[in-house]
Length: 339
Image (spheres, rainbow, N blue to C red):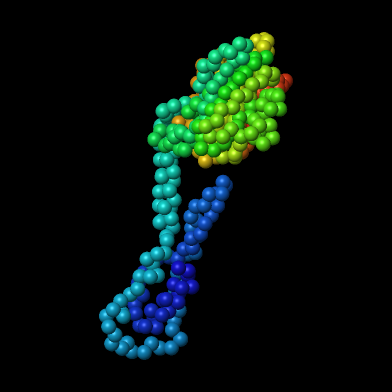
């Protein structure tokens, strides 16, 4: 309640011939913005209330009134926030937020039922490496106890990592067990036009229950992806994605590293995920002091994701499968479709 209303009530009480008691000092509450745009209650103290205004006419003798009519009202103070109350409310909010963050940190790294990016077995058919992939709907655990509706290749998100060598003849047989059509595009590869995986342009869509075979020679070594190219704004963020890694035919072109990690970024109905998991079920990249680590970043989402390692820089050696003169950075932006 504003100060003007408090003063008017005092005058009214005085005119009725009542004795005024103590009234909480007036304050104005309103939203204040923090640096990052969050809203916290702000309190502006306007000081003690003004003295009661003297009545313009002498009060008439009090007439006999029912006791209920003479009872003082609490409407002026019952819902008026005080500086102390606002501070307690802010502290409560801060404690709740801190507990939420602490609980997540204590659970990290949380174990879940399954992980993606497995390396599937393949069979040789003549000189072709044959991979069999099934697209189907699954329940996928993105953090312990929290499962979401997903579309998956071979039951995992991301799907299995297909790893071949430059010059290999690759054959991928996909069976569609979804309740909608689909297709696969090998992102970053130079495939024959009919193997590009774009329904109604290079091929018919793969209907539910049907099988389609993709076959091409792996030509560009480096970090690539495979994903749906049909209803892709739904199917890819729902999980129809995976890594397609092509090793160079000349091993000398690969950097000598102690460990290699794959990190596929995604955003959509499952939230922001790293390798199909959300915090605290995301997995740390563990290394020993002095080791050299190769990290392959792949963005399958629709947002740019800045990747940053605390305490030391990153040396970029390739982008989208093309080697680059090594350069250092602190934070590396990974755009949609970028590797």
